[in-house]
Length: 406
Image 1 (spheres, rainbow, N blue to C red):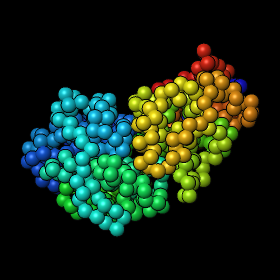
Image 2: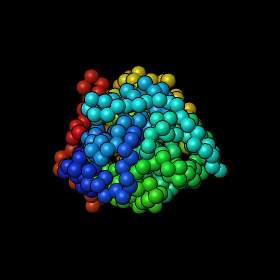
Image 3: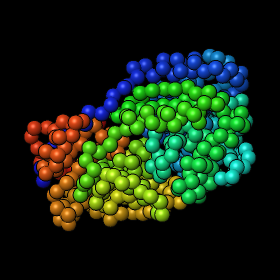
Image 4: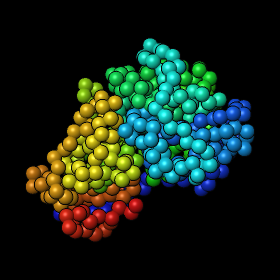
């Protein structure tokens, strides 16, 4: 098989000095800074510059009289244990030494109250603080659509509520999740426990593009606007109809479901409307990101995987995360073959060489490869540049030899 390398010209808006941008954003807040403990939330995603942004926020708070500390706010992630979530935070570069503030990790929660969609919980340390700076990236969710998806509100409702809130959220019919976020989010904002929000947007190259500090009373108004802006940055596959998509690496560092469902066009949620594009017949996944620490949620969205990926799965961590969501198809183990060469060979034997695409993961889509038959189609795409000469599909000791540029 011959492949053409494709470069997508995505939207690039990198902030040159993220620390200065954090300070500038926080300087614009009208909220008085508590002269006491302030919690800063820390999620488990591969957010660009997350350590620098979090450290700058902590320094700013400390300079203004607060005593900041970091709280892992990950719902059911990393085994749903305090130590596991602390290790995840530290693996992202956010150690106590690097941040200059303590990490307070616990799965204990306080019931703040109840609304029509269920009980509302908050991490004990967040609840005991004088206020919470909710820090998160705003982006599309992989399960549902709505005015707020993955961002500040979900961090408040699910991340800060630990596994108790994650179970409540994911026990809700998918079509109602957006309503729950809005209702519970408003309840938490009305509780007075949220000091402010720090919303991050990333450009098409996964670089920090915008940093917005929001007073609590504006979070639910501004977040839908920021989600709309995010969609102007969001990278997608340049072709909607594929026979085979080969994903080099999956994992939570790239998406909450290992592979971003908005990229592959399939949510894997039974009984709920699915995405209508792209339309991909077969998906192969080759590796699990080391940063995911064994959590292979979303592996079931693939049709074929390698033995290397299979052996990297921590079944307990994956089970806890998937079981909490309730979408068990995402934990199913696909057909497992010895190596990349065998996976790709078996798919070629069964489905042929037409309409193939190779990507490194579902977050970094600036560089990809397509089969020869797609060259003219993709060359006509306004955002794509195709190399003039094809390369051969090659393997070394069974491992695919492609260079994606990251």
